[in-house]
Structures are given as C-alpha cells and as structure tokens.
Image (tube, rainbow, N blue to C red; front, side, top):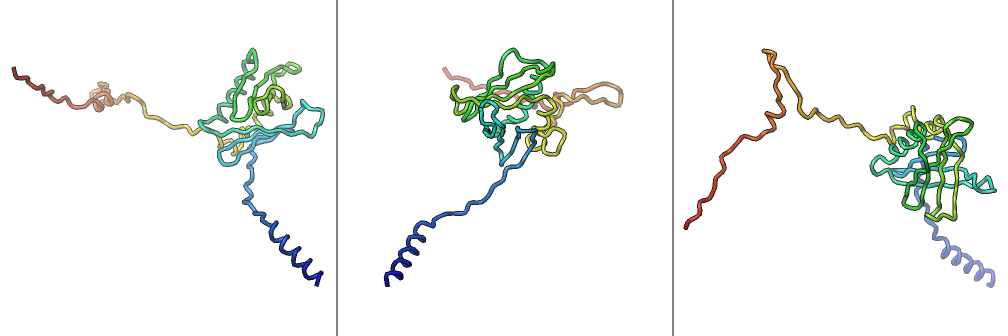
Length: 195
C-alpha cells in the first residue's frame, strides 16, 4: 500500500511540474561571416556576433543587435566603407537600444582596418572588442556580392524627372510638366460689404 501511495504521489508531483511549453524554433539567417565575426538576420532584426579579444578567455562571444528601421544596415556598411577610404580622426560612436558601439579605424601593417568596440549595456566599464577587419573581410560579413546582400539593401525607387522636356514637330522645345501641373485660372469672387 505504501508503494502505491508513493507511486501515486510521484506521478502527481511529476504532472504538476511538467508545465514546459515547446516554443517555435526561429532560426537566424546568416548574412555573412569572417573568422569570428558574423552578421545574422531574424525578421527585421540584425545581430553581429564576435569573439571578444578584450578578455583573457578566448571562448567569450558577444553580440549586439538593432532593427533595420530606415536602412540602418546599409548606412552602417557605407559608414564603414567610407572609413576605409578616408580614415576618421577619432572613433565613430553609434548608440543602439542596449549598447554603445564604436567603429575604431587603424592602419595595421599599412593596411586600413576597423574594429567594433562594444560598451555592453551602455556601461563604459564593460567593453568588448572584435578582431581587426580589413575591407575584404567586412564585405564578406555584409554579404557583398552575394544574394544575401539584398536582405538589407535599400530599394532604389526611380522617380520621374521633375520637368520632363519634349520636342514638338517644328523643333521647338516645350516644358510640358510645368504647363500641365498649373491649375486653370478661375476668377476670384470677392464679397462686397454693405455700409
């Protein structure tokens, strides 16, 4: 009888604590990776993962994330690419929702390189640093030249010319847009006041 009660108690206890839900596994899509730095995408959120060379433990990996609101990933790539062409005098500081990121540019063996410096939780005491990356490595991380580049590139919208010019049969040039865009003039009615 004691064994039956013990078994019954164990089963009730097991059922009471088995309230684990299985969640849908949403995977990150890798945009590009070079050595220990990678760029990943999940919906509209982009994440950089990197091995922190600022710690004595080489197995420390850190990450920072942000949403691509107004083409922020394209702007970040352009900012880094411009830094390779014309090295900024100081670090470029970017404020993300949870962290502060600095883009540090430096020449190593005569070659321009850049490094991500992360102030974790916007605290200057906790600093993570990626390895130094050259232009070719940054292009690989951002997936430049691959189909994954289209996952964040801004769509180029072609806008019509403001004032298109057309030629008429007698070789005179007309500005059709300005003529068509002006509304027809209508007489303005004024009220007369009585005295």
